[in-house]
Length: 104
Image (cartoon, rainbow, N blue to C red; front, side):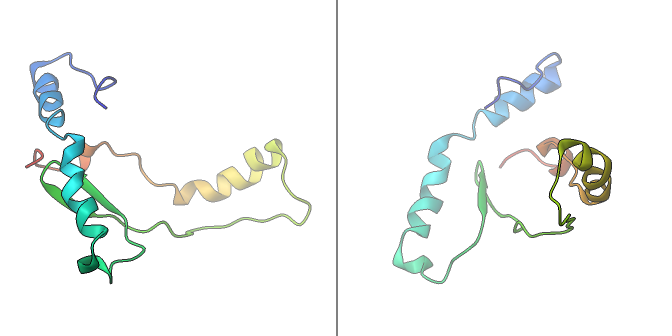
């Protein structure tokens, strides 16, 4: 999980050390809850666990579409679909760009 995150500075190393505290067993309580009768009304949701935080994520929904009756070639995608869809691309923020606090 953390092998590709830079650790060149003390701040980066400290961040990675905190990320290593987000172990798989932190997911267990949410998984058990979602499998229980108590969560019978929870459906179609996307959750994430970040150490001791539970996050409700946004849903994946279409935001833009392009179509061609004749179909697509890689060149047509490059020249037409790519430029038409690009304005709706989502930013690829890193967690440190989104969260102003360390995992709690």
